[in-house]
Amino acid sequence: MSAQDLPEQLAELVREFNEVPDPDKLQLLLEFSRSLPELPDRLGEHPEELEQVTECQSPLFLAVEVGDGDDAPVSLFFSAPAEAPTTRGFASILHEGLNGLPAAQVLEVPDDLPERFGLTRLVSPLRMRGMSAMLGRIKRQIQARQAV
Amino acid sequence: MAVGAEQNKAFAQYAHPQRLVSTEWVAENVGAPGVVVVESDEDVLLYETGHVPGAVKIDWHTDLNEPDTRDYVDGEQFAELMSRKGISRDDTVVIYGDKSNWWAAYALWVFTLFGHPDVRLMDGGRDKWIAEGRELTTDATEVTQAEYPVVERNDAPVRAYREDVLAALGTTPLIDVRSPQEYTGERTHMPDYPQEGTLRGGHIPTAASVPWARAAAEDGTFKSRAELEAIYRDEVGLQPGDDVIAYCRIGERSSHTWFVLTHLLGYENVRNYDGSWTEWGNAVRVPVAQGEERGEAPGSSL
Image (cartoon, rainbow over all chains, first blue to last red; front, side, top):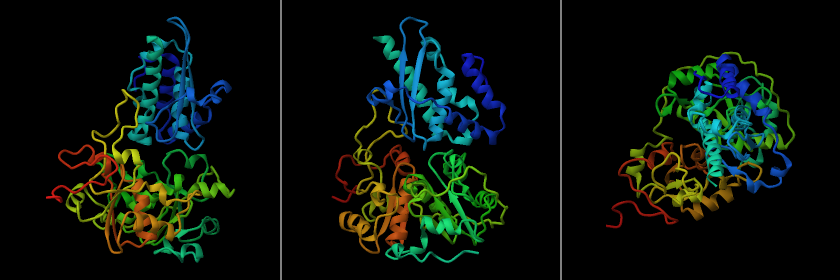
């Protein structure tokens, strides 16, 4: 699956998933689910500042922070319960692949990104929609900040 | 060989007590000859984070759904799956899962399409097992491949198609097990976000609203028979001997209600309309009712 049009830190993850054989892809996703960073205290204490991604089958909340200026990095924060490892895994991939990139680069990430990890058949298209929804909402929040 | 039903006073109140086992029973019988314990969850990775020692995993999407057609696997695919999971036709299969056995009930319903003789739910599911501090393991379960015959799926007794629902409108009670907001057709999503999956909101006319989780107690076990009868008989108005059709969005939540009506309350002709709202809400020229009223079958007021 193509990764040429992706930022390098994201392309690396796409390659990583495509290099492992199918049965190990779920294991890899599980490892990502375990490495999702905890929310910082300032957000953990203010859940109202997080947006719920209702398209996910399990509760997932995200927050996006964008600095000033064109090249300012985007910071992403996710919260999902341990009982939702697939959702956590998707969030963790997006965190590792997008966190710290300039806003413009995040906005250019193609919307078909979730299809590129080779997970759709193993996880099912319905579940992959959760990842699409997360990406959509991240971009939307960035655009909303930029419009202010 | 199948094993005998659990002798448990708590289950004696139900119509088919042999369809339930307790967590204690599973702890004692997992690994016994003739018993296969199956975990079936909403989340495809939850089993991998820790499961009942000796349990195998069956996933509703990747194992039970036919990937290309919106349908269930066929007899050959089911036989192959059973064989791979070490399940013989005469084994006792005990299914448990997350979220009050919501997905476990769905898997049990699919086993029913193939007439697997002895399939049971572990009352309370995964959460009760964990709440009781019972052991979980991430060790892979060793499976000895089994022989399973190719049995043709028999949909008619427990599965309703869209045409069946249309034909049943006004004569067969329908139960909508989705949330109240889905039932009324109220939009619950945020502005500018499309309502995913369906073009129309609301419910099938005449359907009573009974969210599926009302049948579950706090600890994920099923409510008592008296409590269930208060809901489905007294409140909804189901009469003994009624045929019933249950539906939700894709047929998973309504499998839980199907289990309650069939095996706990003893209704003999309950069908699950698995096309559910993702089919009905997109279908052309089918009637839709909105709001809290059940609505009337087309033509019934003429």
